[in-house]
Image (cartoon, rainbow, N blue to C red; front, side, top):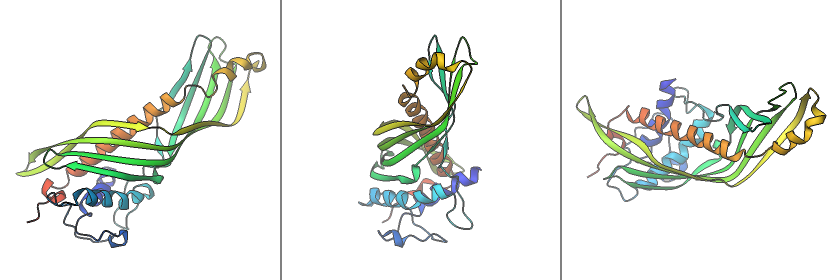
Length: 253
């Protein structure tokens, strides 16, 4: 599993340099790259081009016959409690988020001397699906279930990364940490496929309807951002351990 994480970003960052600006200029198999020269005036474009080209392969799970990656779509989220008051509790479980294949990078900035990086992504559509369950606390046999979809449209993510060099086996490597992360959530809707009820449901239907679909965004946003931030930072650092800093960002004279 660890090698699957490694492969994608090694290709993503190293295979960017020395290639034509056209997407068609990237070779999928056997390309010997020169990295992104850190003294180049087009360093940011080099990084951006590589990320956008290889991003689609991260979701398919395969770059070529020899190289596979861990698919990000779907992204599994932990079970969550949506509403809990003195009368009723609702949960959203078995959650999986899809839509990252529609993500594309819109801005890259870097200060290579300070080892600081900024990425901005636009995501057209994200859908989180799972099982919705609500029950009365005093009488848990009275409950409802449904398949729920929470949809978010036209969102953006901005992240800043701060890096530092360290020595290992007489070679210099790079490690990064997410120093800042923000997101702008666009339009969001919630939908239910069908409902199954149990117990003397009709007598308490108003209580269930009052909480149905409420206060979901803070829970989904919190868990989604946390999962993405953790995975992104982990992915980069595992890959950056594979090759010295000079391999990723050489100085060209």
